Image 1 (cartoon, rainbow, N blue to C red):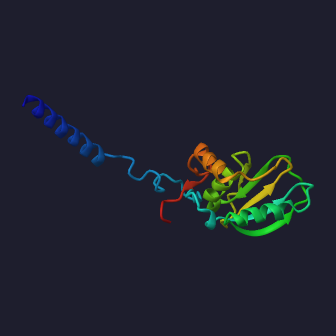
Image 2: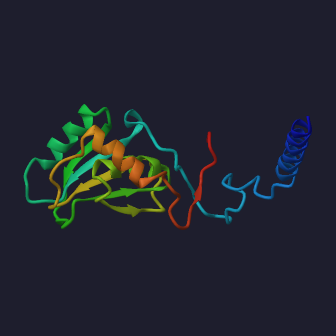
Amino acid sequence: MRALVVVGLLAVVALVFVVVAIVKDSQSGAGANGGCPEGWPLADVALRERKDVKLNVINATDRPGLAGEVADEFRNRQFQVKKVTDQKKQVDRVAVLRFGPKGVGSAHLLLAYFLGNADTKFEVERQDDTVDVVLGSDFQQLATTTEVNQSLGDLGSPTAPPGTCPMPVGK
């Protein structure tokens, strides 16, 4: 009988502590643009589904037709490929992902298709949600679905780039 009284008393005390913690929570506005300096852009950090990701594929190698091949692979994986072009200046890496505040979540997903080996270039002044995928000379192939899922686990959640604030959920 005493054990039941002690357990009941502990449950009541725990409940009181939880209620007090919730009532006195000073972080209730955190992450909801509560501490965002005025003038900072909002970054859309929601991880996108493939069908919602818009991208341009740019070949920055000496391999003709590479952008078209990779664009077809992205289309087959249900991405929205907008433009396929070549760039004269070659890139000596796997890829570079260029994006603005509205493309943070999309770029994070695309980074997984390069197993985290692409460089990211955040362009704060960019107004669209399209990501430029610039293919470099070290590019071999896109990751498989299993590799992408593992890479997303390794990369974690998208975060707002420096100088931006995360967009509140549902905006």
